[in-house]
Image 1 (cartoon, helix red, strand yellow):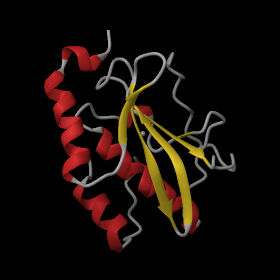
Image 2 (cartoon, helix red, strand yellow):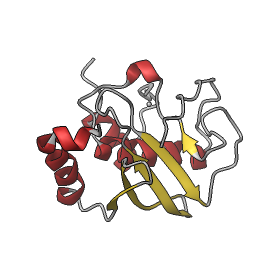
Image 3 (cartoon, rainbow, N blue to C red):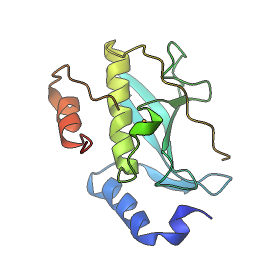
Image 4 (cartoon, rainbow, N blue to C red):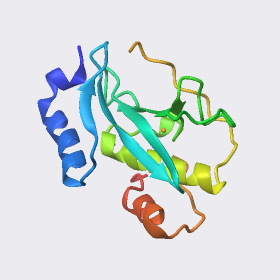
Length: 156
């Protein structure tokens, strides 16, 4: 059974985070009943018109997946998978308190690192594909990405 059918309070929190922060994404369902946010992201002059943040069936105990599909990023390192998903953290770093909005910010951070050339090439294995992820950066970045990293730093 999908998580949002049993946990309507968490669903309200998830929707509220996107609405309060002015993120213009649309909440929809895929063919398997998984909830997902669809929208756009841009970084360093590169525009992605099809970005999906997909909640797994057993959210929050499974990590949310992020797909950048339009245009899809080339697989130049192990952080970008063939299905269009990106790896923003190791699976053991997932925290059930993180939200879809947190993953939206992680996608922004990912694209900033990708297009600025500061992305690590360390191998992080892909998550298993469900039937239908962060090393904190200590480079002292400034601006909005640095701010986001400080505000949403995991509590551990």
